[in-house]
Image 1 (cartoon, rainbow, N blue to C red):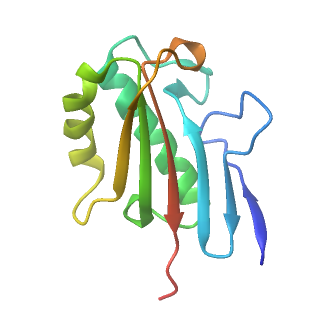
Image 2 (cartoon, rainbow, N blue to C red):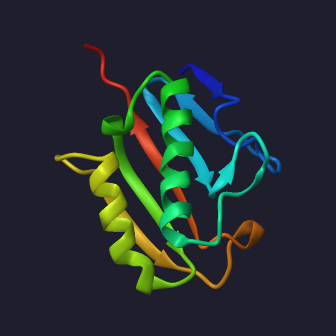
Amino acid sequence: MKKTIIQTDLAPAAIGTYSQAVKIDQTVYLSGQIPLVPETMLLVSDDVGEQIEQVLKNLSAVVRAAGGDLSDIVKLNIFLTDMADFPIVNEKMDVYFSQPYPARAAIGVAALPKNSRVEMDAVMVLCDE
């Protein structure tokens, strides 16, 4: 078993005691991303659509740093402070993902770090071609 820590300056730095992602063999476990702009470490805006898009950009940056792309994600967890925002998640995911879509869960939560409205984490599997 080979363990590699994934880190990129193109995604927000960890704001706690965790890594952006950990790769074990061909599986990559991505930590939760909130809509922080990497350069400023501030929320992109209060607009949930912009927040979802920033989260997907942040996940994309970590995925690329691990040697994959969003199509390699097999499981996506979405945390929302308001489940009424879920249709916007579907709209934004349609821009960033194509079929076959990853398995996913959407979970309503009371609060997220930095008063974010959305957070996503994922599991990615890199295939040898």
